[in-house]
Length: 267
Ligand code: SAH
Image (cartoon, rainbow, N blue to C red; front, side, top):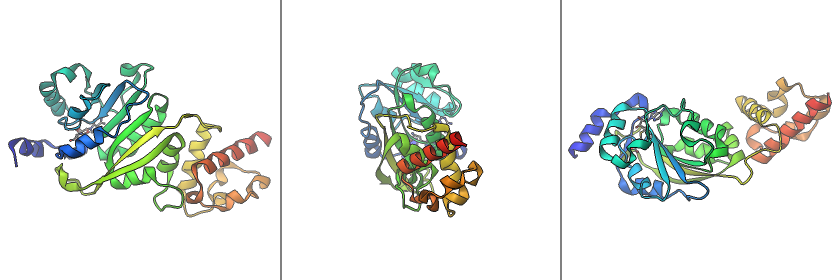
């Protein structure tokens, strides 16, 4: 083990989800997963010691990185001089992305801190009008969940909400052994490409509420789990309400939302 590796091991902070990738081939493969279409800016979340950043800097886009850990930021400033003005020492979840990107489009990439995976995805969905592409590594289970289709055991809130706006593709699996320190789980790399139309033909807030409410009781039929929406007897007679949430495709969830929306209007 080299000195650099030993240093990383000592420095890695568990509460920040720090697992440094040590396999250069995988870092390059993640960087190459970007299509580079429809944006000129790139934001890497959690660059750590810059193993992925190095390959991103070779791309014909402007790379920014956002890193919460002061020691990693100091390391990056010393080792990537050209990047220094574009290092944001911030918490991605709290950062107002307009402060850097204004109204411009940017892609997101990273070997993400796994302890905040879901929040990273939800923030991306909130900002989707400016984020045409999203690529990177999560714990395998989360990556699979995001990309899974109806009928699958892991299909849930994250799958439906993400795929309402993005085409999701699971790219490849990465074993724990290529990280320092190794995580307890396998990792998975995915890519999200925003759909041409990132607005829904139904009330978007209601769509989020319907999906979340339905999956909160995933074993129940929609007739039971969606009771709080006060549906009319007429609407509840629709066969769609006999289904369970995991049986509904994204477009069926959109249709369901429209039905509920119009039901409320008619009452
Ligand atoms: N990309 C590096 C490090 C991955 S570990 C590599 O592949 O080796 C995840 C990184 O995310 C750590 O450097 C950690 O400090 C950083 N991080 C954790 N929470 C963060 C947050 N809320 N905002 C920005 N960075 C964060």
